[in-house]
Image (cartoon, rainbow, N blue to C red; front, side):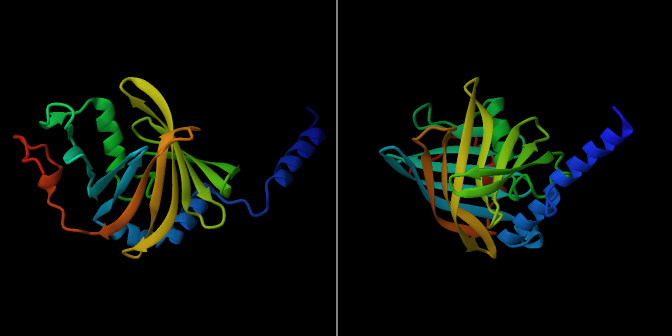
Length: 245
């Protein structure tokens, strides 16, 4: 290619980039600031989310707990029984009222998912230190408006796409692929109704399900507790069957 033609092509590429274009780090920084600031987010040691999970005709109380440095527990009460899934940093375990009702070690795919869920900050905070790779893919149009699309390649291999509203910089959608019972499922979560708790904005509405599906399970958050007292023992698998509620 002639040098003059190459120079013209390069000039066209430069002009094609918007003057106000932001880097992925700038977009993430604005998102964290919109939620309450990086310093406040990193100061949080634990969180408890209480709400109700709606799945078709079923409406069930749910509690989700996270604690540094990577502990996770979720409880769902259905028809008087409590289902539990937890991660103690090493082992994923659960109690299914529909099964034996005893604490059981969960498969590796569940462990991987819960290890991701245990991150109090979320993957965008200190993503380099966590071993993740992030890429800003540009702006896209969603039903809710324009959004920045960020690809997150996690250290463990999972890939997610986070969509940050172009005006508020809050996360409004997360897409990703999960393996459920050996089958890859493309899922999405729609986040909204942000409210402040502990000086930080949290989504109080989370609709999750298969990507593109009309029917989704919806978590309506009733309360977010920042830094509740959570004993590490809550996240460890008990050796005996817990008493029924």
